[in-house]
Length: 394
Length: 216
Ligand code: SF4
Ligand code: SF4
Image (cartoon, rainbow over all chains, first blue to last red):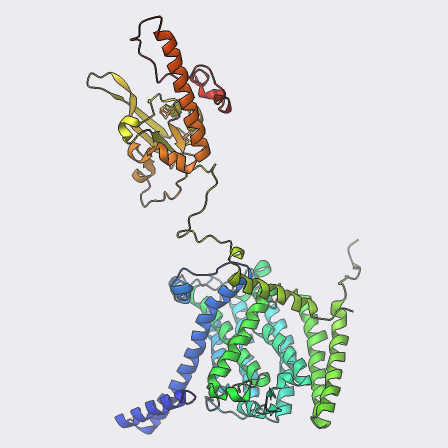
């Protein structure tokens, strides 16, 4: 019953519309809007909730209490923040490119909402069942980079441009390991369609142990790479260099105020939830329950529980790690994540072509561990800069 | 060999311990929830001065004799005193107006140091913000006068010392007047309000500036 609650509500509403006597084309359009709006609304509500819970968690890590003034336990804080953002002056710098300055926040928000369309939220809750959903996700989320650069450029401010350039360097470098590790999943599942990928994880080892891709030897590495790259893609700490306020004021957000600024934040958080949802779909079995007898809990609750857990881990990491330096960041992407993603790919081939049995699992696990240690070794060494030689000075 | 990434896991463990610990060990949370939970001020805390009165009636029990030493000594000149007069126009040792402009007062405590009658002391009340810049920031006599018990409450040690000293002075004076009274006329008015001429043992902790001679 609860499992089908969203779909039944939807069907009931459409029937209601038909009974009123609306032509079927209008009913279809209204139905499509209803799905779009409700999906967006769920994620915007999640954003509002996280904006206060994140501060609460960060506060608890630092042994503080966090926001607790507005409403019970400070839960109405997002309302206060929203009002504050709305009534702030919207400053457009004198030399800014007015049109681009307005366009950038819009362009940042739209792709992060668009990618919500293809995510499978439950066993029968897929807004759009694209058979190339994974491709769609990467294609659409790449638009957000343009938005960031647009924001940096339009402000006509050196800090914004520097932040935007960092953002482009970072996001482009991390897109490669992200896509490569997602590719492993697509190969293992034999499909680019996200509902199909979830279905292909739908069996249990010995009737108990979930057969999710994260628990395969190659999936462990690919999942790690995907998660780290996802942190970087969404500008989450420790990869929040583009808006590193200690060096760049606020990076591409320097020249934004009021609701445009808030729009960037909404885009960032919705994007973070979208990529958490993608991680859950690809590696954590999407809406599947972790144990078969827990299937009585509706699938969409499982899905959102997992998404919230991954978002919590992201906040946890934010509370732990300091911001990286730009050269460390890039060398980490190119010298560690990308090779590790390729070795996950190779391990997947071993695993698959040796018959997906215990022996092949062990083999590919050994390969992954060897690759992890070999690639990680330089990063465990103490950093000793080479002696600089200057060409023209001295 | 060090395992790559082990440092990150260690760090995550530390933050997790802190986060979970903050729910179970209340002593970890050191934030004071200010408006609900009043800060526990140290005993020496001082904000703005107030006037002490003895007994229950502020008008008769007021210790201030309107000697105006504090008015003269106050560095930013924020004390304003007008001496009271009786029907015949004779000045009496009581202030008619005693105002302190706390928007000017710099909480230096010099008025407390110089007062020879232990009449003015520093308060610990700091929630004094108001919507009005002028009248509500000038404390008049009615807002300044507080009973001695209040002083005991906010600065127990200091108040006990003050009481002890006053008591000792009173006894000394009594003994002196008793000694004076037995040989000569008993009707000589004792002078309860003259400042002590010789510093006694407790007086030594106050600077010599407290004698009126040093202030001129
Ligand atoms: S504390 Fe200092 S500034 Fe304030 S009234 Fe006394 S002498 Fe004046
Ligand atoms: S010095 Fe003391 S007694 Fe003299 S006017 Fe000031 S408060 Fe009153």
